[in-house]
Length: 310
Image 1: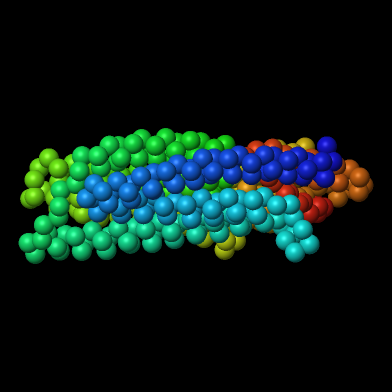
Image 2 (image 1 turned 45 degrees about the horizontal axis):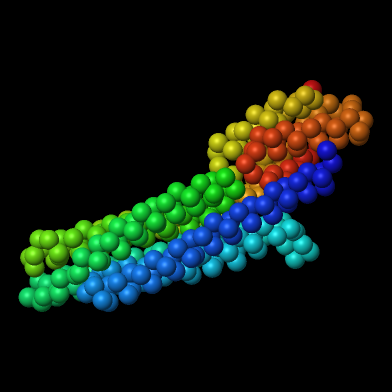
């Protein structure tokens, strides 16, 4: 298969991935719209400030969904004159934005929870929530957990870090709802003394959200800063090159990742008495083996031929 045909196949798969990423994101977008509205209205009429805060958290998913819809499309655009190595790093940028949104939401939950704890410790009384709040929270937890698994499954299948990051954003909302459920249930069934459970649980959730954000942020920042492929992936490349007939040695392996694209450069050593056609055939076979070694990525391999010394 010619190299241009191989690259066209990669881009066709990328176009399918964009459609799938947008489809799953739109599903999440509308679920977040319904849940956010239900939580805010239910929290106002159900006298639950925790549920209102949880609804605001759900509405924050709107922004993340929009970011994914826009950025994933840009990330899978074909290379052009201004971006000759493609647009893959836009997806890493989307992941960074999502992680920062999560941190901001966690900070808001933390500040609000501390204020509520101080109010209770100084003798303040929080009105007991209405039982309907529990129903809304339960529906939210089930919906967001299903959405997490659905979105994560799609993200893994299409190898999209931004979609996977969005899945964890859905789960953070489910964690927030669990904390809200504990607090609201305690306030309803355990009396005034136990209403402090709500802000305490919310603080725990905010810390979990920050941890998730950092785990998302670290690899995305590495990619934006030119991170190489993982040690395991480089080992697969080395095995593929060493196992190619005609390759007598190699050195100077360099890699970097951009979204779902991987760029590989390597110097291979061949018999110095070969003609150009024979050496070129070995180089092409080596590049083919490198692509096959990393089937989950769109690999752009470049080989430099050198004569092997006796």
